[in-house]
Length: 185
Image (tube, rainbow, N blue to C red; front, side, top):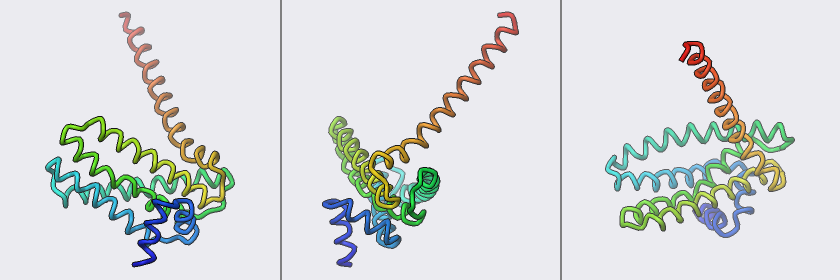
């Protein structure tokens, strides 16, 4: 238990060292406990919304597992293309552990219900930025890359997906305009 609490403390106070320990040591159990705790705390906000804590936790758990595995696979593939030398298990453990700042979202939800939408938004923006920095550190520590390359590895799949979506929108628009023009309108 002492090792786990030290790891959580280091995740807040010395995240680079903590993520090095988690990713290179493939600390699945500790990272999994941190991740499940974060998901449970996030499901507490479903009490405020009225869906119930059990249903909220199950929905977040199913979506979380799916997104975690998808994110880990994409990052591992892109990092492999960029010459990274880490493991898929290491990055998955790192991504589980670095979701910890999202637990502060329950405070943002409570503050929002009390009328402090601006403060709640600021808290969530800080938590998301902190999460992104921890993602960069996890990729950097797992694959032995610089921060710049780690940011590119994290951003490249989103840019590619956005380009594909924009391309599809463009194709559908051209097809629609062509169909309208051929009808003689």
